[in-house]
Image 1 (cartoon, rainbow, N blue to C red):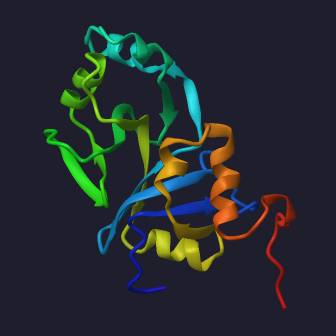
Image 2: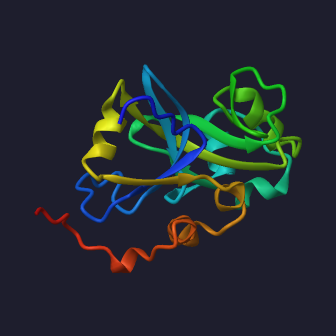
Length: 186
């Protein structure tokens, strides 16, 4: 599986995924190149809301909606650091444009804006990210650890968290319940 670029795609964990961080996970790949890959798990919330996170970084929230915004488990790498998937791209200090109008920002200014009600129109806040070294994701794909499909923005931002995984599977015309836990060998 050389020369693939999964930026802007979902990777969907197969049933045999042994790593508990990724079992039944849906990850949005934000960057994939010859150096490796970076993604955000979008279907795992943690017991925290944006107002809790803002308190931890000493940002006062004046927008009452921040207490309703869930924080997600973005992956097992740098779980003490915030990552914000959002639309539109905007002019934040540390942002990578991913695809279309979707971007990933890691700077505090986006959270400060959200606290004032001036953040992006759509956003998914996470702690941590999923990371793969050069060739690692390709190797996992070759071992049938993941399915992949081009991402849809509505699944990232609009669908309830408990429905994201099945919504991504349906993009492939598949139902996770029909998959076996182990791959067969001929």
